[in-house]
Amino acid sequence: MGLSMSRSGGTSSSALKRGLPSSFEGLEDETSKKRFKEDLGNEPGSEKSVAKPDYGALAEDLAQELQCGCCAELVYRPVVVSPCQHFFCGSCCVLWIRNGGTNCPACRGVSTIVTPSRPLQSIVDILLRADPSRERAERERIQADEVYKAGCSMRIPMPREASPEPNLNQNVDYVRPCPHCAPDNAFGWRCPQPVIDYGVDPERAWHLDDGNPPGHAFCGNCENLLALRAPSTTKCDLCQVSFCGVGVPGRCLAAPLLSQHPHNMSDLGDLIQSSEVYGCFDHNTVEVDIMLDYLTAQELSPRHIYREVASHINSQPNGFRPLIELDLFVDIHSVTAGIDENPDAPRNRICRQCATEVMLWGIKDWWIRERQKGFLEETVTRRPDCKEGTSCSRQKDLAHAREYNHIIAPRFSGDSVLSTDASMSGAQGSPPVFAATTADADAARQLEPEMAESRGNAAVTDLPTNFLLTDGL
Image 1 (cartoon, one colour):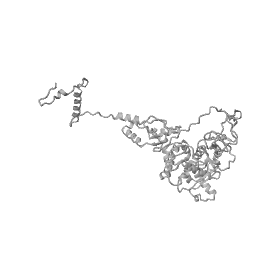
Image 2: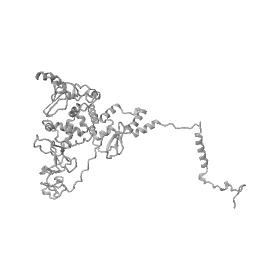
Image 3: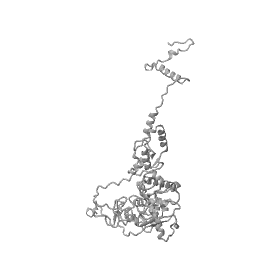
Image 4: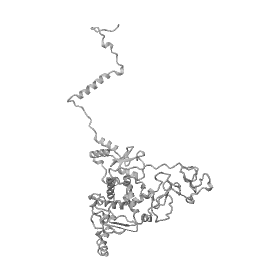
């Protein structure tokens, strides 16, 4: 058959093999040599060269990955934005929110919550142990700790709802009808003094220069026109601004006094991020942190503080009148307020902005009263009082603020307020000394002998230590 046969009668293997293409020539030899070298390297006693890892490059790459998305430095007290999972320095995120940020600083996505990240903090700690030169300067760390308290969660405010599309046929110089002006509106009540639409009858339309149309005002929240006599309309008894009740549910509303929610004060994270809260305590961050720790331990919310402050003010003889006389609620809204026809009338309804003003006005006095309940640790209550009291200029000094107590005298307003030294300092068992509205605790101590003598040497200590007489707040 033309094939050579072996002696045993079989076919020769060399004759049956197909020849390799020219492109594969020598490949089998090279592969065999490579496998031989690998096998040789795996033999015991063989010396195989291993590349040493470059730890410096690894630390550099890790530091690049751990950069804050805001300050572009190694992240400090890292927090993670959910659900996008971008991370930032805790202080950077707080400043972002204070400056009006309403979404993630990196991707601008809507965020639900911002939480501290222990895994990231552990990686940062390992990196700093390997390369301590990458640690932030001490002054930067102190400043960051004053802005953000480690371990606290926060909430990025939701973006504001988009404004409705403008009606290009409307003339901006004329008032648009309120929701109740239309005869067949969806609210089941029609305004008795409907405003004429400029697009329907320009001659009878109401010009903005003429003020508010009769029976109408502008909502303090959505700033749309409303009917004053509409069933959905409510009026704040403090700022005298009306709310439509139909624009933004829950916000275009003046709720009953103890049912309202303070504006931008939903949780403790809002208190931490509020510069006004620190201003109420003369920017003494130590005293504010003590209060925040107490609120966390007792699970108290800003709304709880507001309700107790409002109840306390409302229980005083003059109620909210001293606060109104201080013009505390003037120009809170951008719309024109109504007229307070009866300054002595009870205050039953309040808007969200006024609720925040009430809470901020009374939060320090509330904290003084709350300290008397005895839930604070002795390390806090046993601190000596600062001789300069609330007028101390060193309250921003952390070491001084930690050593001395500055919650001595409440912030007084109104006609005349008397308070005991025990209630002001939080000390237990010390004799009460009265302090006038403009007097410091030290001046009150000097007045004690004269007051006792003028009362026939009557013992002032017969009064209970938690005595607190407030006249008009």
